[in-house]
Length: 213
Image 1: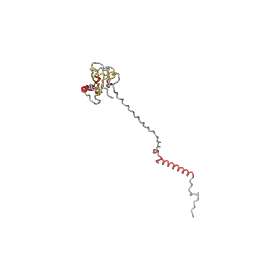
Image 2: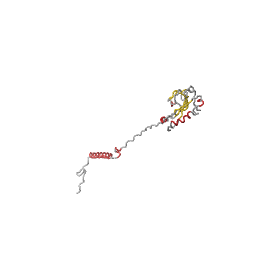
Image 3: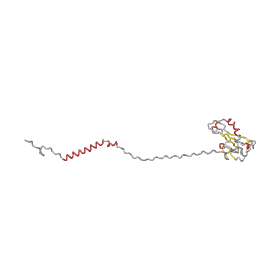
């Protein structure tokens, strides 16, 4: 006796899977795959927002200021030292340079002097103003040391015109100079030689030797 063969649709056949169920399962699988890739992608290096490469800014060219050379200042030349007698008029003693004819004349120690033309009669003449020592560090030599050399200094043939002075029988010399260490330290380093007449009569013309040239 043979077993009966299962016929399609018979009592022992497996029921067929509905098509809509297959479609639902496929859709769920697709959604699961998308979600899986999204989750995995969040943990991949290229998806890390904290590690995102910041855009490199486009460099801008800034103009570097060009240094302008300062013009070299032109040195102002020192004014040339004045030479020769001071002009006619009233001057402080510091402005006299030698050769000035003076009228009136009180003493070599006057603070101011009136300079006049030597061609007119005058009471005195400053024939020399000479520095004792131009070195600013030099010590005051003392009044005695200065006065000991004034006679020769004020009557030297290089400063006093003996031919012109011989016209006056009472010609005399007088001098001013720094009399203390305080004056010396204050810059008074010159001695000044004056020629006048002991009688008080005026001089006529210059008695100073005029330097050649």
